[in-house]
Length: 93
Image (cartoon, rainbow, N blue to C red; front, side, top):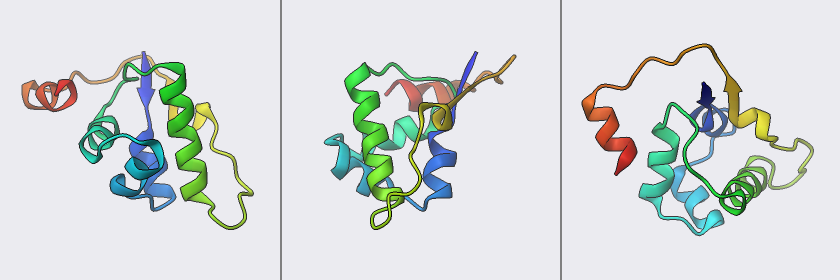
């Protein structure tokens, strides 16, 4: 299973959902749902690329010394705990 780590990346670089939404053209609610997801969400290649570009711009606005790589956003794990019903509604909304 693929574990989604957007929340960790955003936290590490002190990136707000509202700022990432502006850089990607997505709504703040959309970014918040992506951030809360435990497993890899359905994203097109363009959406994933836009997300990574937005993260890079916000993470290092002056130096741009550290690239955000796709491997920063996901990792393969044996198992991820199933979300409870409330989490499922949040993720699928």
